[in-house]
Image (tube, rainbow, N blue to C red; front, side, top):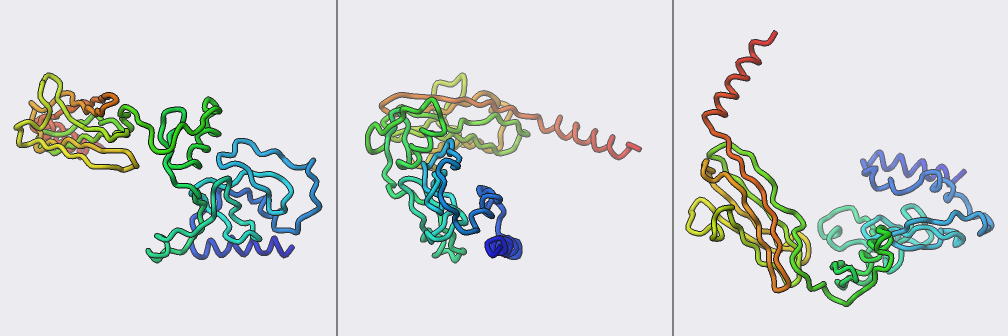
Length: 277
């Protein structure tokens, strides 16, 4: 009974302080209420086998049954004697991040991988740490043989993780195409318009290209900006990314609407809207 009153108090406190409900969504409230009571005698035969645990298995708070451990980034219990958020899985520790303290945020403990060394998987993909590789192995059945190939990032040809998108805009506007590429060694990103043999911006003053690392590790993002677009700018633009292991590309279309036709169209529909009963 005391345990149930404690849980009700926690919920009331969460509501009073506007704590995001998402923090508690990974918990089963029935299980939480049960665990608030004293631990019964362990009967292993009554334990429900956990399935699909991306962070591996941990013992429950009573030390009896196996259950899914919390994955990297999930909330956790700093005190081993408590059992509100749950315990961290394999190769994970419950910690309070320094940036939360320095930013004046309410400290929230999260599961952090004990080994932050980047590794290359046997699938040819780079993982931030061993915990991320384990998550990929469990979540994807076709990767059940996924293991560590070597320490450090995989040396591969570029992969366009976010290709440029088609754009429709009015003549005279500014537009930007973006292209995110992951690879190691880092790729070199260039832009070209269909029908032209030279890379942009060439000597075109109303075009500019930029590139910088990120947003993820071993990624580079390239941009093509076209200022005050004209009808002759319409066409297909391609992002090329290459390193010594290969080259990849992705394209997007720029469609330009004539300003005169656009103004006539909007004026017509505004007039019709005012005359509707």
